[in-house]
Length: 406
Ligand SMILES: Cc1cc2nc3c(=O)[nH]c(=O)nc-3n(C[C@H](O)[C@H](O)[C@H](O)COP(=O)(O)OP(=O)(O)OC[C@H]3O[C@@H](n4cnc5c(N)ncnc54)[C@H](O)[C@@H]3O)c2cc1C
Image 1 (cartoon, rainbow, N blue to C red):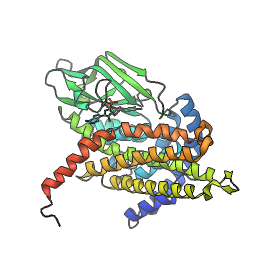
Image 2 (cartoon, protein in one colour; image 1 turned 30 degrees about the vertical axis):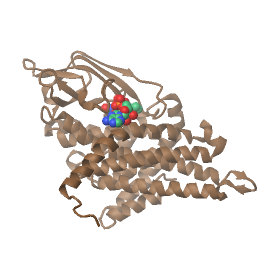
Image 3 (cartoon, rainbow, N blue to C red; image 1 turned 120 degrees about the vertical axis):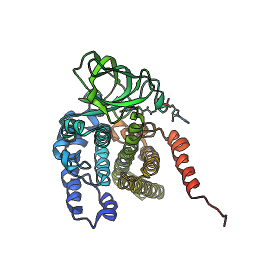
Image 4 (cartoon, rainbow, N blue to C red; image 1 turned 180 degrees about the vertical axis):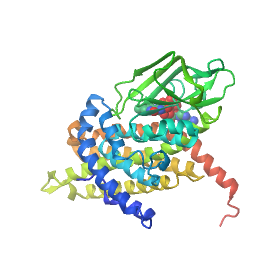
């Protein structure tokens, strides 16, 4: 059985049907990835959620399957497939296990950042291992004292000209994959100039670099999260990503891509909760009928299906626009809508399944716990709605004002 649905294919069909590799890409999503998710990822979701385990084995297997290579250039071993296909893959994975898939999405965000902003030397050094998942990456922007207000970060760096090295001090908090990662994409502020720069950090350097687990999360428990502490930790100067002082811009651009992946991830959560309710409603008998035949169930299942379809359209559409100048708008809108839909659908699915939905055994409640993270991470929805989306709306108005009221 494949976890890839005909509804997913429909959205991709609309965008890509005329392209020569359309069927090949669908076959990959349906047969290779869809089967991998149903056979390897979904069966571990319950246990990994319960025990808080991130499956490095599945992560590596996903790399061998070629999943991470999808959107990246051929010269680094990528397949150069449109990002909307990658979104469909994330939805499929997330339906199986959103905790695991959070790690997948963040790894992808780092690959994207290196691919777009690092020099050729760093790309050649890191991308081939990352897009085959021989190495795992994490993204370190947030700190205990700076989340939404990311510019106020305190982790600092200084340049040691004698050794031609950067020296990092401070700590990062909430870092997904941080216990499994080999490659850390870190944003830090210059001790003197106050500029934020990005660095690729690896383990084994001079100085102290510690990873402290953050446990007992309410959801995404199939991912691992940690604090990273740097105490005079040295990295070679060549590990500076792009230009010094541009690190905050790079992080924000990476978060645009990240928002698209979290949108697709959320669609998978909603679809998972919906399918579980749909199945249960075909089995549960009450008042001489099946749950599925009650008017309220029909209405609510319809409303869920409509909302999921809308968020899938927005997510894959944002993927399609990933390399366009108006990506920020598509990414923010898709992220807000899809994360809200995931919470709505998983919450309603619990109630519609009655007492059974309230049991962990139904496996529906995990979707709600996972979904709630989507509204917080990659730009909290409040921040996107109060700061990012209005900025885009007002900029558009400045460029193209409505001159007459009709
Ligand atoms: C499980 C998990 C994994 C994570 N993984 C990563 C990772 O891999 N890398 C990484 O860098 N970070 C990661 N994060 C951090 C995440 O990005 C932050 O939690 C998020 O940006 C919110 O920051 P905060 O938690 O500091 O909340 P705060 O910024 O303190 O926000 C508190 C509240 O204020 C609201 N708020 C904030 N600003 C405004 C505003 N201007 N107007 C109105 N309301 C506002 C927020 O919506 C929120 O409700 C992760 C977090 C979690 C929980």
